[in-house]
Image (tube, rainbow over all chains, first blue to last red; front, side, top):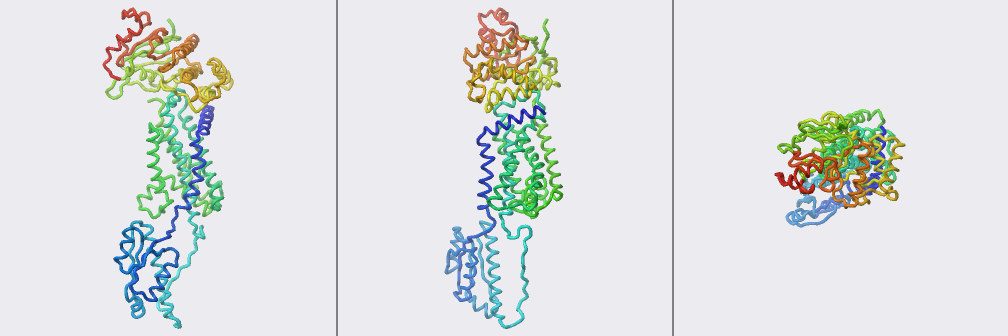
Length: 372
Length: 246
């Protein structure tokens, strides 16, 4: 164990002398947590709308006004004909075209039935999809208004109507930051730990110092522990900074207990670090290690449940995500921060991470060869 | 007859079809300074890596300080020091910190570490630089420091792979003083070099050509054998026959 102490002493000295690593550890969480949640945002606003009103009636004006008043849409054009509006979509200046046919008002009143046409620019899928559904719900709303006007006096509504009242559990105001910030913090911790560990042994290979280590009687598990522990400490530091940032900037106070999160991290970090070290033992240059880690990080993050929910992924992807440590961290973070889950709720996840950690570090140890 | 510390028999290393080191057989006795010469790519480093337990041979046998190079590599590592071609101390640690780190992983006690550090620093005359980062040292001093670190744990054998490459003549001389001092204490020195004046300093030398040992004897006997006025000529005569290109 004395050997490990000397290794730790050396690693920490090297880390504290490396300004760029320090910056990565201390500044990155700050910047990412401050910028990302403010910019990356699920809400769709500023949908550019072009209106082709062939009716010019009181009703059609009322309807358009209602759409604009919702705040989600920006009227970029009032076109005479649909063909006039189309170039706006083609040049990406408009996202939606709402076409109101001639005789809109007359048909609506006389026949009690009228269709409007909505053309969607589906280049930006999310914006288009959400925009179209916003628009249709506003139109439905308007439709009900019209109905109400007609049935004034009459006590029985013409059509039965189910209206829904929502109650959002665990995030009452549906503040997406409560949802995003813990997820982003999870990714940050993972990136810092993963990249630091992946690049470390490779760097010693590149510089040539690994030769000098390999020719000493040092035990392999001592060497791996000597790499694991410093980055484990750093991971916890990054995580703590992140929690502080989310408290002071976003006012996020975890509903659950803090130590529960650290307890999970205790098992999670060795899993990620073990993966990084394993990559490190396979690679000869930092460039290789960087690319391999980048590839896996992309998969981990995109399939991690931060941007899209795992439950709505196809079955095979859900199976893959069981082998994705990031998905566990994101889930546990949300459970503890939003829902207040206790240690007994996340024991299964801790168990899985412990298995990951043991398997990955053992592989890294065996794949680190002192003698080729 | 002195105790034999390195003994090899037809030691061979192949990388695919390429035979880097071809059935080399030799022995080195305790306290000897053994020069290992050969052109670039002759297979010296490969041979040395096998002897240090860094690389498992393809065939043949070898024992280092009584330990087998196939099965007892970790035992070998306890008994040897090694200084590779590339500078391999930590440049972002100071001189003292490097000494402390390598001394520490060789298992020196706290007391030993303190004594050794002071002695090494004094021996190298680096008192005022002891706390500076190694990256700020000139090459010659780095090499002397590497050597001192390699023998700090009092190994039986120390392997030096081109320790004086790129070093000025005066520093080379000082470097050899360190080598002699270590050999006097009974440390066996196994050294590769391209400098023929250094070859003359060795007790015995072997010259490798294309992975094989073509000549092995004391410098004076080799000059006699090849009827050459200097070691330079001996080397030229042998190396010119090489078929391997760099």
